[in-house]
Image 1 (cartoon, rainbow, N blue to C red):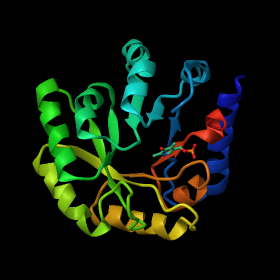
Image 2 (tube, protein in one colour):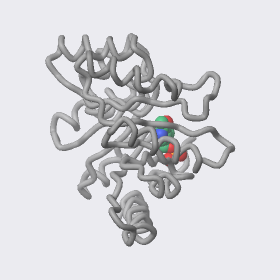
Image 3 (tube, protein in one colour):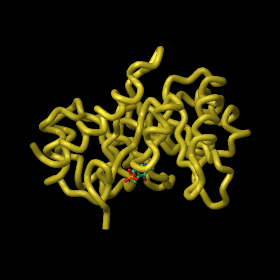
Image 4 (cartoon, rainbow, N blue to C red):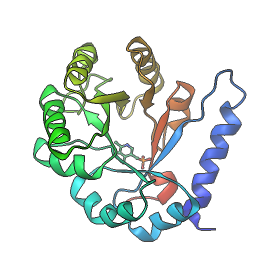
Length: 219
Ligand SMILES: *Cc1c(COP(=O)(O)O)cnc(C)c1O
């Protein structure tokens, strides 16, 4: 078995071991974040049957995924990185999920592209949960307004996403995200990376985004 598949299985088993006894536990989906890695590492996962993959750059994703996605329409591709408005057209065309909606301007652009292309994507609202300067994500006090704006513009908002501050314990941020999500009555919560996914799952993440623990260190 290929190493990346072993790594994925290990993560799934670890989650099961830690949480499956909890009442109402829902197993989170794992997004294999394949940015910077080539198809030699991605194909074994697809052959194993894994379907959710994440990329953070639109151009890289187009080069890697256009063909394989048209050959396998069960694959779900998630844009987990920031999105500039001039890339929205290409992003809507390729991706199934966009995790980084954080402004009305971006939401409007996605909405316009959806109409033009007659295609819908699912979106997450990215929250700047640590209130950090120069970070993607909408202020937590503005999440509800942005959510309303998205709904009024025919965007299918499925949940909230965050990247907690580096070098701080992530748990309080995950907890706060979980409360925000409940308050807005949303289904999905995209949080948790290689270093903190167990904390995220403990706080009811429904999608974890894992790169290096599956594919190895990035250069
Ligand atoms: C790269 C990336 C990940 C995965 O990071 P790892 O630490 O390698 O698991 C998750 N989310 C986002 C937004 C990323 O850019």
